[in-house]
Picture 1: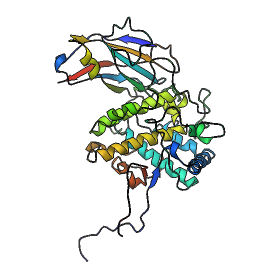
Picture 2: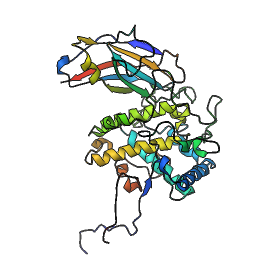
Picture 3: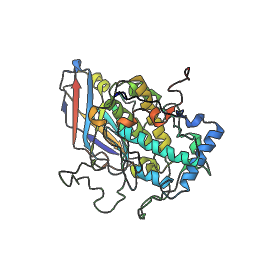
Picture 4: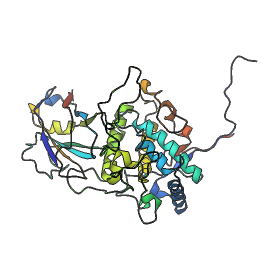
Length: 147
Length: 266
């Protein structure tokens, strides 16, 4: 299982005024085996047990990524960096183009008592390889909050 | 002649076919569906199982995930697949797997000598590689955390139906869809091989049914205008646009329980 804790994220609006908050995992890679992500907020990631579940008081949300598994094609088939080959190339994006996953964390953030910032801890695992530690690969984590 | 053209009713009107829950099929209906699937599995041409599975995964990869046309593309796909079933056994429809209300994998998809329990994987038109699976399998319900939610997912129904915006509904239903693929595991948990498993089509019949229910509850909530004329890749004509798959009855089917229609006076 992969464990990861973010740098602190500033809350864009005062905690008491939050009507809705969501996390965006931007640029998430969908190659490799499918996997499941649990997120926790301000959970002291070092001490969070590996078997922390959806009932944990700092659990914020979960999502599953239906991924493409091992590349079945020849060399270059799964190179998501292949872009348009001409200005007239209107074909759909490559099947492994990174995806953004959005998670509503309103309830979890509102349960925090006057947080100055939010740290997100991630537990991510592949059912076919539960010990893997390179599971969730993404470019940025963004926290959006709305009054 | 009047310059005003008239629109005529079609000369022949046809009743739409109903898709039903796989666990509520009569024994005869289930036998007919199994017969149709078995017949497709025995065909290695462009009427057969391998051909249609290859639209979604190996070798064509036309499926749309993480995309605003996730729902329309899979509706078009099931339309074509269902017609292929009906070429084998008239009147069968793709039953839905009701993972909102049922725990586990329905018994209809299990057991020996059952074409719904699995399928060979022999993609058409490509040379199989040594590391490719040769048949489908499932590994439902991972034991360790973190893991997908097990069915039934009824606790998520209200959350799913809450949005009035098509794109937000799409985002939410795709998350539940992903959950069920990953929960089922095996080849169902891998995009290139998932559609070779017969349970795939009933999973997507359920996804499509939930979209239909949401459409009935939100009749004015269309996809954004820039999506309506996007075409949906398919191996056979018609190649639909998003606009053309919004009305399931125009595609010849509906879901049992989602509508009730009686004849008029004509």
